[in-house]
Image (tube, rainbow, N blue to C red):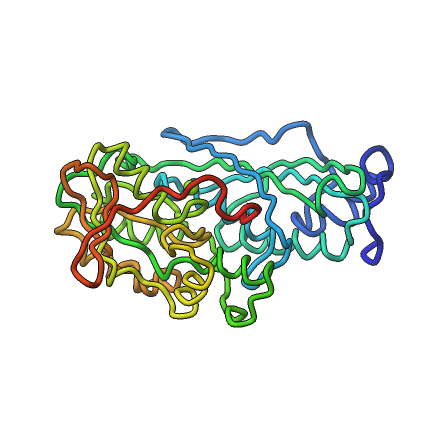
Length: 335
Ligand code: MG
């Protein structure tokens, strides 16, 4: 079946059973028994649950540094981690287009499973639908995730206080530029690799070093600028970013200026913004940079009392300008 393509007959009955038994389940749940129930049932410890949901429509399905399968696991795992939750369970819903290459589907699902294994997450339930040719651009994936928030953790966008330090966990803009350069055939940016990665391990390292961390958010659609605006508005403060301190690779910077884009607006899939008390900033940087996914973590700014603009940039030449919230859908189908 691996050489074949998805047919409408794979959408129900015997065809669906075959697709699940021969392709989907071996790829995401190898070694699992044959019994499938209507819902996953599991024990819960006392405490707080975190629950999140996301859908993935990225184009192209495979990109440098990842694919829709990896992305759909990382995106949901990261949203749980940003609330300080330990991710435990994932649901995976597949919408497959008639004609989709089954070998490609198997690759996407294997990537998804590898991320879950790396992150210690169990794929607990899922669904598979098949739609007509031309209706799903290959495949879409929707994932939901459940995690447990350890006692004492209460991260929130509303927690920022004047004087706090603003940290980014690594060089920004790689995911968006990797996708865009592939889509637009920008040869000069062809070595940019997406940052797509599960961040729960890095978050645990940060939170054990700096439990007083105020807020975390992954800088996905809308990039760092959107996260900083959301934080500033939720906490009724402003954030001043020091342009020279923002980690951006030369090639991402070059691609952004070529395309007329601000690196702060570009989507990441493996970077977060952390807000920590100023006194803990050095400890936070040390914890992040000791982890492979936090290399290049930097203090990029400070929280101030609310000013006219929520987010301001102190430019390298000594001036200051407001940083806009990205307008509308800057780069469609980026995640
Ligand atoms: Mg998020």
